[in-house]
Amino acid sequence: MNVELLARAQFALTVMFHYIFPPLTIGLGGLLVLMEWKFLRTGDPQYEALAKFWTKIFSVNFALGVATGITMEFQFGTNWATYSRFVGDVFGSALAAEGVFAFFLESGFLAVMVFGWNRVSRGFHFFSTCMVAFGAVLSSVWIVVANSWQQTPAGFHIVGTGAAARAELTEFWAAVFNPSTVHRLVHVWLGAYVVAAFFVMSIAAYYIRKGRHLELAKKSFRLAAIAGLVAALLIPVSGHHHAKNVAQFQPAKLAAMEGVFKTSAGGTEMYLGGLPDEETQTVKGGIAVPGMLSLMVHGNTTTPVPGLDKFPRTDWPPVAATFLTFHGMVALGGLFVLLPALALWLDWRGKLLESRRLLWWIMVAVPLPFLANQLGWCAAEIGRQPWVVQGLLRTGDALSKSVIATQILGSIVMFSVIYAMLFALWLVVLGRKIKQGIEEPVVSPVAGGKE
Image (cartoon, rainbow, N blue to C red; front, side, top):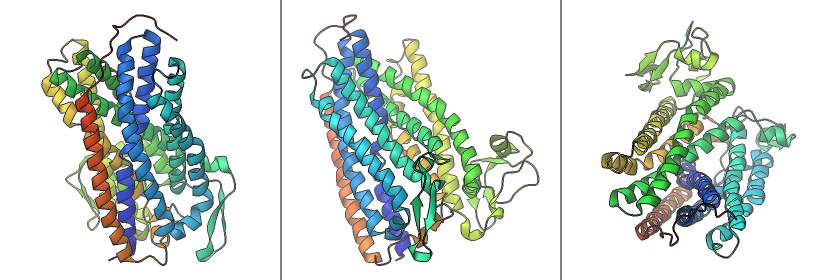
């Protein structure tokens, strides 16, 4: 049993399970703000009923996100003590900022958002919802800052040598706004809105197919579909700029993402699918578009993009895993544009209620945005290998010296059982709340009603 492999597997398990919840929290928080704003603007109690219903869903998701995030961070001191010592001055600052500025803001106003209906004014309740949504976004900022610093380190110097070496923060804002922070943040936020949009659309589609809460469900569906379509259309733009950033600062990662083994004399082709083979250094079954990768990176079809042959073999990421996760994410992105666009077109024509097959597809497609988010992070993290901090610290050198394989394996089994139970509990609670349905407003919609 390989200690490094087990430690990486455990961290992957805890991070990927935890990351089911933060994107939904971020996106759903924004949608709650929109719903309450619509209620304050129009006085339509249906939007208040929707906000109350989705607040219940939000609170369940928030609780699971907090619970699963804590266990993830403990691994920095158990399995990855050398890593923690090396990056502690930088990484610790970002994590501390996340706790102080984001978590307490989010959790502090959460009680008002969940229990404050009819206890505080509409305006203050809306302010609380905004603060919770902002707290979720702010939390993602500091986590992404910490991760982005590992990808493109900045604002530091190295103190000490050998095993005692560590990165010491010299310029806080240079570390915060390291070269990849903004690109990664925008991509994460857009992905979160796609997740939340499909989540809301799927439950609304369920109610429409069942003939329950039709007006409320249609309002939820329409609002989520518009937000999801806008986010899905912006994701390729964000992804393009992010890829250009990767080309500049992590060229080996880009080469693995695109299956570029050999640097061409002219323009570099782009593969649409396929399976990279490191032994033959070819992409099997792939459809190559000549010069397309050069066009995406350099703006012309003649300037070559560096291939993996420009880097030592020991610095190559796992090519097949990086390539497949990246292309899987991109392929799913097209579906996230198609489904809400088609649904909005049918809704505009007044035929959404008749489109039971489309509503069914939207219901069953709800796991796909979660999957796309996971694939994107897998591509980013696997593509950084063999570095845990790009160009500074290798993953194999970041492990704790005293941890043994059986300890990690035992904790993996324990975490797997607990997480399976938590996931089942999450599904059961969500199922009950969805089955209970939306509490229909007693008062009919009245224009105005601002407070």
